[in-house]
Image 1 (cartoon, helix red, strand yellow):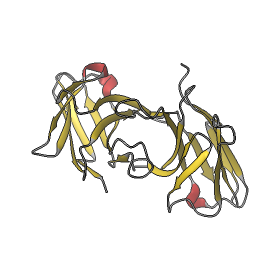
Image 2 (spheres, rainbow over the protein chains, first blue to last red):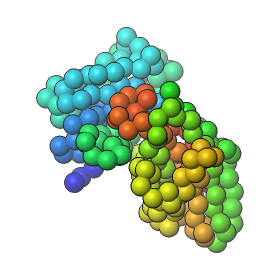
Image 3 (spheres, rainbow over the protein chains, first blue to last red):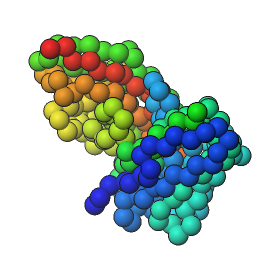
Length: 115
Length: 116
C-alpha cells in the first residue's frame, strides 16, 4: 500500500494557462475525491468518483474545471484559463466503500500558484 | 446537512502540558467523526476516527478523542505535548455514505503551537 499519490506537488503557472493534476489512489479503492484547500481553511469538497463515474460536483467547480477517471483508477483534474483565485492546494483522497466508517485517505496535495 | 465547529483557530501549550482541541458537530444522522493532522506543505494524515463503537477512541501519536452525543462534541486530547505535535488539526464529520459534500465535512482547523 503506497498511499494516495499526487503529481505534480507544486505548479506555478501564469494566469490564463491550463494546468492538469494527476492522482493515483490507493490500489482497489473504488471511490476518489478531489478537495481544494486555501490558506487558513479546511479542505472543501470539489467532486468525487465511484469507479469511473463522476457522481457529484460542488458548486465550487466552475466550468473551467474538469475531472476525469477514465478507467476507474487514476484521476486527472484540469483547470482551464487559470485565475489568481485558483491558487490553492488541490487534495486527492480515496476510500473503499463498504468498509465501516469509510475512512478517507488523503494524498500530499498539489500546490497551485497562479501569477 | 452536516457542519463542524472547531473552537479556537490557534491553541498554544507548553511542551509536556495537556493538549485539548475542541470540536463540535452537527449531523442529522448518527455521525462518523474523524481527526486529521496536517504538517506544513503536506496532505492530511488520519489521527483517529469514531464509527459508533467505543466512545473513547485512541489514535496515533498518543492522541485520543471522546464522542459525547449529549454535547455533540468530539474533542481531541493528548496528556503530554511534544514539539513534534505542532501542526494544523482538522475535525471532520461524515454521514457514512462516503458521498461528496455530505460525505465528509471539515472544520476550519486549529493550529497547535507548542512552546518549549
